[in-house]
Length: 133
Image (cartoon, rainbow, N blue to C red):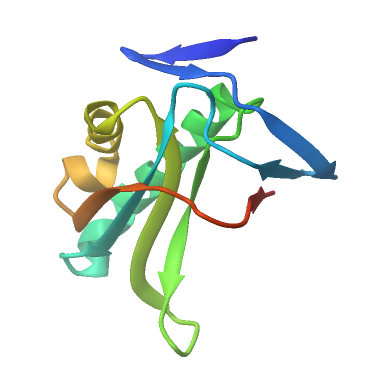
């Protein structure tokens, strides 16, 4: 598989190195792609968000399943200084350009249902690698 298609978004195959059971080291974004970071924070009370949070997790899982060979999407939640959830969420992923990245994140159930205040930025790594499990 050299790529996969999701709606009108195209994900080229990433150049990755397996470094152990379940771990992948990403040296650079896949060819023709750029890194993006989406950050978010709930803007509604948790009881109103809970259902959409589960849909968000399923959405991320479906993206990763369709893209399992490339593993260019990582997502999780941020915690406060006491390791308690509530700091918001973070997703790092590769996309062709800002428009494609924005199109992808606007399909996130948390964004579609106005559960989060969010921000999308391009990320240009200067040093280091990302290890995903």
